[in-house]
Amino acid sequence: MGIIILDQKQLSFTHIDGIKFSEISDVAYYQKVKKLFLVSDEGKLFTFNARFTEKIEDLQPLAAAKLTKKSAKKFKKWRRDSEGMTLDGKGRLLISFEGKAKIGYFHKNSNQYGHMIRQYKLPKKLRASKNYRSRNKSLEALAWHPKYGTLTAAEWPLKKDDKKRQTIYALNGKEWHFKAEAEEKSAISAIEVMDDGNLLVLERSFTGLMNPFVVTLKKVYIRNCKKKMCKTKVLAKMNSHKGWDVDNFEGLAKVGKHRYVMISDDNDNFFQKTLLIYFEVLDQF
Image 1 (cartoon, rainbow, N blue to C red):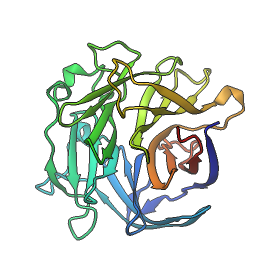
Image 2 (cartoon, one colour; image 1 turned 90 degrees about the vertical axis):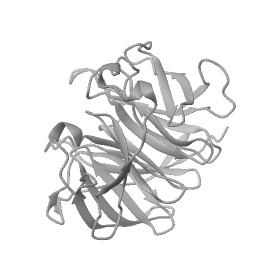
Image 3 (cartoon, one colour; image 1 turned 135 degrees about the vertical axis):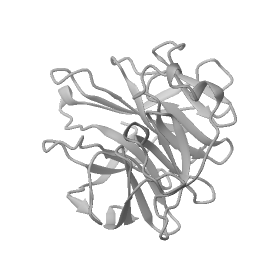
Image 4 (tube, rainbow, N blue to C red; image 1 turned 45 degrees about the vertical axis):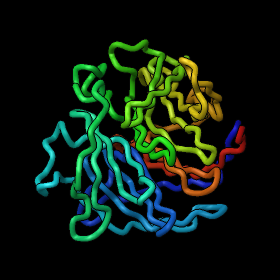
């Protein structure tokens, strides 16, 4: 494989600050202050103290809040499906949503923790729910690139696109395309920018309890990609029918040079876990 797993932790919390801890969909790390942010697809935000060396040295919950609109009012149920999260170059916390697709900038501290500050304008094709394969298959992933700014991706390609032609969108309208993995219904669950400016993409394929659950980590070469389809390279493929005890990994964050964490969604199910896996990408080319 092109990765080495350094450590892992199971996050076993019932509530943090009175808010139920479950269904984590993405993660972001603010290296400057050693804070790890976790977002739930139920519209909840959690903050942890976290430090990463050769192992996960520290992981302590600090705060939790429900995400709210600028007015401090709650999001309606079908508008609070927070799926992607990142920190931009100025340390602003950005979160993307399914349901009614949107990307917002949120307070990450102070007494307005979790309140939306502003909403970003999406490329035209990403604005209408009718363009997605379903309302629950829209803005699943989010990352910030020092050259291209905020990047996002739908879980599945848009209706007009081929089912195996995945797309990364920059908010300024630039696009990059790559081929999804061969497994049935292989979908983007998270993206992160690598040290060399290319993308680390987390894909997962789940088609039923009797079928293999497959999680793929792949590198997508968006730098200098002028072709219709960008080059990709599989770094790791974890298949539940080939000895891997894999869960529903949905989140990805860079925490150090060539080092990342990925996190699983427990689906608010007693039989599933919230796992944080710390790993290093070995293949840099």
